[in-house]
Image (cartoon, rainbow, N blue to C red; front, side, top):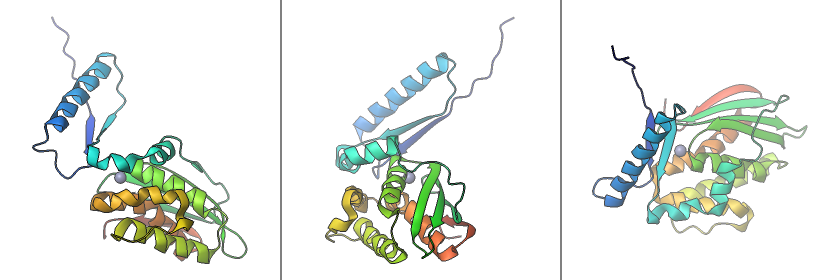
Length: 207
Ligand code: ZN
């Protein structure tokens, strides 16, 4: 008798563009995603797969800096002596962040680390944010938060030089769903300052 085995294959497909429908190159990509998934499955590799479609229009989102930070996130890990921990999620995309912050005696940001998982934009934004905010005073963090929010939401606004590498995130403006990805880590750090100590949660969607 033939051996019967149940097979399950999990594939997640993400599209950064607004529509996949009517875009032949997207369907072509989807076919190659599926072929790759089957190949992995045949090799008994059951790790979940995630694919990200890139259309020429959104490629500018993925400049070298973003890719570098999403692949090798800075300040990633645990902070055992954290003053506040904030757990943030962005249900629209499936991004999660666990932010740990240690305040100094003056309420400034002595140390900051994050962990979690999510799309390249959310990971890169969190990584870039931690490198920028570490060692900053409360006032400086508040100012940076305002400037970054403007950068990713306000058309035509001039990106201030103080934002440095964070200016590469400007491209998310054109994609409202991606703004949530980019803002997740920032909402978490804002919550950390409001909370002051202990633990908190934050979400990009209203409760
Ligand atoms: Zn995301």
